[in-house]
Length: 142
Image 1 (cartoon, helix red, strand yellow):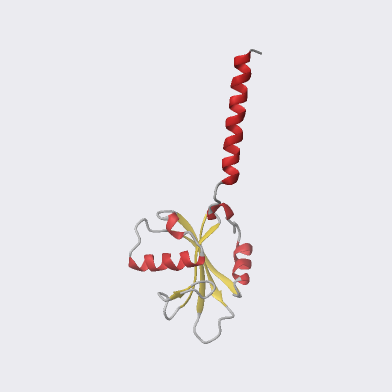
Image 2: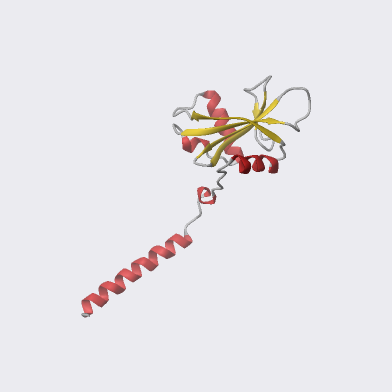
């Protein structure tokens, strides 16, 4: 092996080491800590951890709007308070899971709803059938 080849190998190794060091020192992005909820059981378990006893009513596919109107902007702000990345999924298909909340109390039917993209929860809310446009977060955020 010539001296020039050795220098190229050492330079390449130094570049790889520098790139590795940058990866270790960078500020972590919240999207790195993604939790997947790939099945009905794991989604129900998540809602149980939030304090809700639920029964699955329906799963369907919806499209998150590309442009948010005032109502969707308010909904997106609620999701941001909960740490859900709804606004990063504009225009994407989402799985909407709707649940009957069994332990809310009162005579009014209450629903829990999750939106998932690729198994990741991007939105979640609690609402009554009497006022479906008035929603709270899964932990009571408004």
